[in-house]
Image (tube, rainbow, N blue to C red; front, side):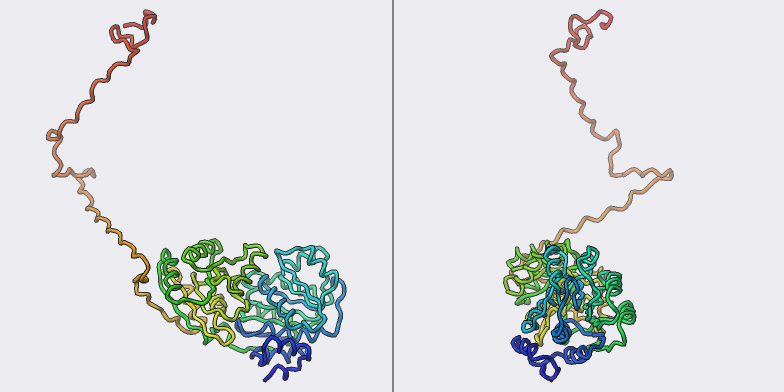
Length: 448
């Protein structure tokens, strides 16, 4: 099937062709015709399948014939992170450039005044994270009673980040006579409840089993000690010689340390996590896309939705505590028909998380033995001398006191301790009359 067969407008097809796409992905092939019929949709697809274009393309055509009013957007796309929201905005710019549609991006870390000015002009497409949207709504800067299309993207990630109450509040503010599209990589019970509550007779589309890993990705597991992780990561870098890579960690406080280590080793590495200001995060991602940064040391903020197709490797410096996060992390490689390699460093403290991952993906991850030998140009660490064994506890007498050591000489046989020499009197002391240095004018009753 070609994009021409999906019923898209000539303007949208022209933008798609200029992007270099001719054949839709399976999720696009199934979702676009249903969405264009104005039906509610539940789309289940693993990361990297093209689902963003799967809902942006039909939305552009559906919104092309209307006009937005002041502070009353006509459609709303909810995203869990600023990076995902920015990427969706980029899709609308790319595919909607031959339509006169206005768009606003509402995310934290950006000027609220500038965002309010865009809303005052009226926008056709509003792309937002839940927190900033509710903040502006509470200030009276936006009204949601003209929403015709609602998209809840990465719904399972929304749940993981604790956004479900915010989602429920936002949906309650939107008119019920709308089209609702919900996309998720997995369908846990909480997302199923959300779907049943807010969607009307939805068409469920699934292009892959939930939370499965791509066959284009080779996976490897290496067992190590927690203190050897950085050294082992350096060895893997030399062994694999990756073109570029994501390095995922669980804790934000460790990201800067690992990024500094890679820089010292001569790699073009940069950190990326949620505590960075938005401008720095955006610039870091752009540098990674442009090739100025080769290794992105990041938290799970980069695990979903970032459409960077030519990533050769993923290194899980930490085993993710959620098995779904493992699927999304390694999904950053092996995209768009390319092959990729994913490595994971595990310690004996990660057995529970590792078992959950293998249970989810329904296969064991091949274990790679590094052999314990350092790389050719890596210094060999000296082995510490073993500690001397402790002597047995001394025997004790019947009364509980330690028994005398027969090898120790008796008191009378021991050498006498040298006596300290008599201290010399101070210059101001006068021991002739026993006055201990008080001087000649000491009263008589002090003298002996």
